Length: 189
Image (cartoon, rainbow, N blue to C red; front, side, top):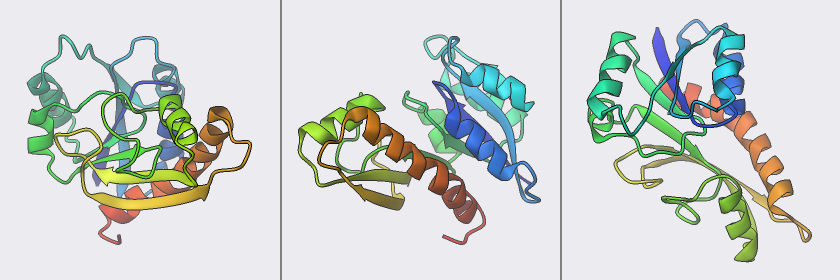
């Protein structure tokens, strides 16, 4: 069984979507949710879904501490589903090519530290981009610089706002992220 730990910092809508996709899967199991934000709704979501949640303070928990928690749970892969912190090097070293992130732009544009959520969508619109989209990639030691596994684009509408773009990007995330995770994990990508 492939055991996933989902890392999230916010509401957890992608966490719920991924859980629902895999809940009856015979090869992939969502084992746990790791969260660095005590006020994040993802903690309630995980509880309601019956998923173990692990709350940690990134300023007090070392990479070794997190790695030990993952190893105790026999996690095989880490999925970043709205997690906005850099993953500690110790975890990246141990889980090489086994950490996947989704980013709400067409990387390499509008990626890196500080580029998440509405900041990305505002920047895309202000830059008068013709397209935006999602990027699903392997995580390495730099923000949003890992090997790209998948991208999907949408055309920016004439009267697009960060809010409308965010909604459209979320639809792409919900549709593609679980499918690409599955294909990657089962070597079908």
